[in-house]
Length: 242
Image (cartoon, rainbow, N blue to C red; front, side, top):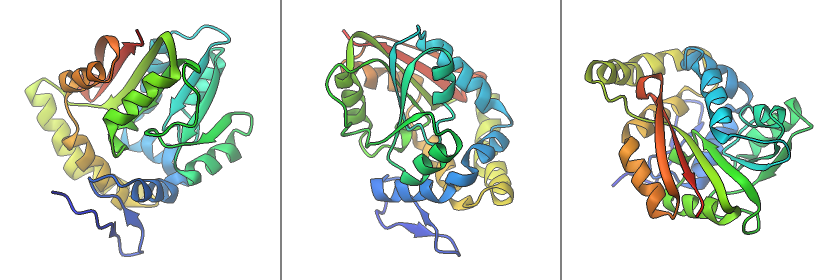
């Protein structure tokens, strides 16, 4: 069993454990909010923008549709949805990320909320999405159920999350990057390198594509399918509310 005691770096910055206690995770993201998007661009070697474009296309947005973007952070994933014509809401439980997002993009709709207890009525949205956030939720199954609750019948879910390359040599190279190169890069560009040690550990502990699809189905989503991006480093999972 993983310890629930938060760990700290030499500066006293909180780093979440793999128990993913909400206060720890929120505090960790509060600490990295200012440089979060820049750091992600560097550590992903520029792939984050391609992943966001793929996510927006997978949502199949038509003008006027209501979209909930969970774990939206600074709204970098939400803004393309608004450009596509959606009435999108950026929701996150890190107040630091929301404040930074509002500072940068004051016209976006930002809402504080926990994915396991969403502050929205039933059947509010035409689509719900979560990018690189389901892995950080203390109870992912409860979050998937909440997403189902706030989605209208026939509405859709898209989960964009780190996954597991299925080709052996690529998987080995990626694991080496996660555990060796990524922490070294994070020490150079991040305001909280320890947060990116958590990132690497949480990715390795996360279920693969097929297992996540099973979890979506268990939460009540139908027509579940997935598509790999970047050779399986990231996967887009889709589902429909019956």
